[in-house]
Amino acid sequence: MDNKVYYHFLSSNNALIDLERGAIKVSLINELNDPFELKPYLRHKPPIRVQFNKVRKEVSKKFGLLCFSGKLDESLLWGHYADKHKGIALGFQINRLPEEIIEVEYCSERIKYKLTNDTSLDEINFLKLIGKRKYQNWFYENEYRVWVELKRCIRINGNYFVEFENGLILKEIILGCRHDKSNYKYIVNLAHKYNSKVIPLREEFGGYKMVEDGRKKRKIEEIQKWYNQKMNRTG
Image 1 (spheres, rainbow, N blue to C red):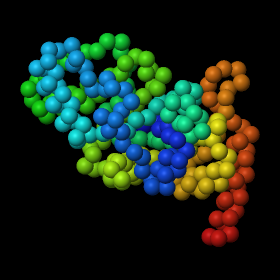
Image 2: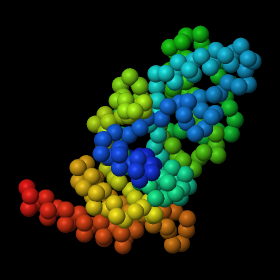
Image 3: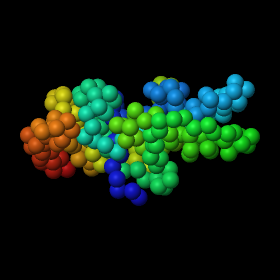
Image 4: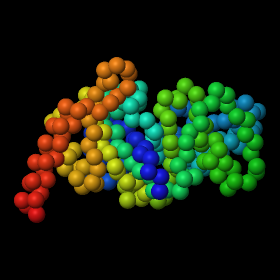
């Protein structure tokens, strides 16, 4: 298993719900924030584009994405995906085959892919080849993605979720620099459930990265000590 930690950025409310459920939401292809996703083909003539749309539609029915970043210290990620730094990033080790963890390639031009007329092969190529390409201005995300079959997910209120026990090992719960301190006790309780670390962040003093906040960390360590003592007494 890869020991690398991959980060999934969320609002505080959604992160806490996911921690309570032990599952994270799957991103559906037609709901991704980049409308160019899995569309390498607009340079083709209309009849061929129609065929591509059919393949993309079939892939969208069967598969969704788990999206992660290899970066924790990028301020833009916290601003865009974690409720303007008030949210939480969940750090996972991913127990999947290396080829299943796709590192996104950032490109300046779209490719002109040709269909094979083999539906199954075209769907595989969409996942493995086309699905890892993204416009270069998204490079700050340092994105990694895992395709998941929707039929293997759990469904809640019309959304699809993958349970942590399905190859996701929660190692870190990272708190944005504007995260509400009143949640600390509850988050420590959840972290204990998964045997994971809680890491609070602050702005870097000499640059523009997000770094660990030592003062908040000591506060969390005090709560963890109190929680452990409480568990020992009740255990």
